[in-house]
Length: 330
Image 1 (spheres, one colour):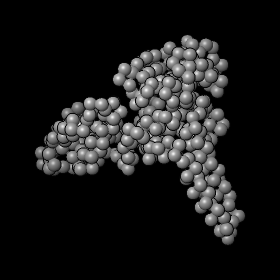
Image 2: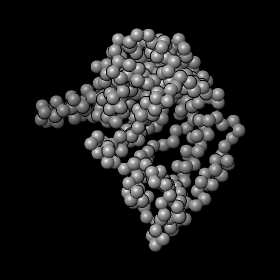
Image 3: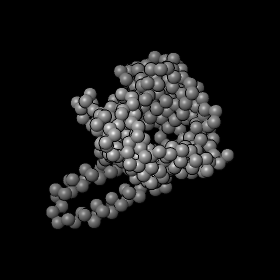
Image 4: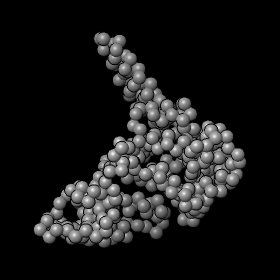
């Protein structure tokens, strides 16, 4: 999704650290966060015995000679690691050989990444590479055409996407992606946007307009903008309740402006599902004879097909928000 000459600008170390923090996994119970497993374990084996173990926290770990090949989950539990990756001898060489055989001169960066991910997924299925936990099990690898159609649905060529996070009345961090052709040619941070925003009121519901104006003056007209308080955004990332995003947009805890048709459709369906669930609870209390069950089934079917071909989930073949929740939950 990036052009060959992508520009990376407008970032300070603090701004970039804050952006990464937005996508940092967190424990379901905040009280358990200090005691949770941390870091990862990388294991090399020959199919019968462990040969090398590397911990990202403590470095090289000497495997016991009498031990065979324990499960990756067991090794992670021993090292108090939150993730693990194991590979059979020669698996990494196999990855590069297969990549060399499949790569073509005209492949862009997106196609090369998809090819590499597909090869790793094949080796995982063959047992040569293993990961734990497999949070994205069952999520298909999207094709280049799927990614192109998704980009077309949310950001037109020559326009930009903006993510703006606010905290205590100030712009906490921001991300601007400008599209050129089949990819983004600019990845910009907030360092050069803050001075152009002028004086802020302290309420992001009004101040986001100043960020919009600064982005459009410096980069490109916006195709999608999403603005919120940072803690609200982090909470919604892992909120699986029906209508969570639709409710947040309705009460302006999250501001989406402008709204591409694909995003607006998804928010509308999300809100409709919330209304349907509420109505179903009320109906279950008064419909003693089950007369409303056929109507409920019809409504559920309509909601399932409401997004149609323009829904991002339909284009990708999976729910990106569900995949994100799986990645961000410890």
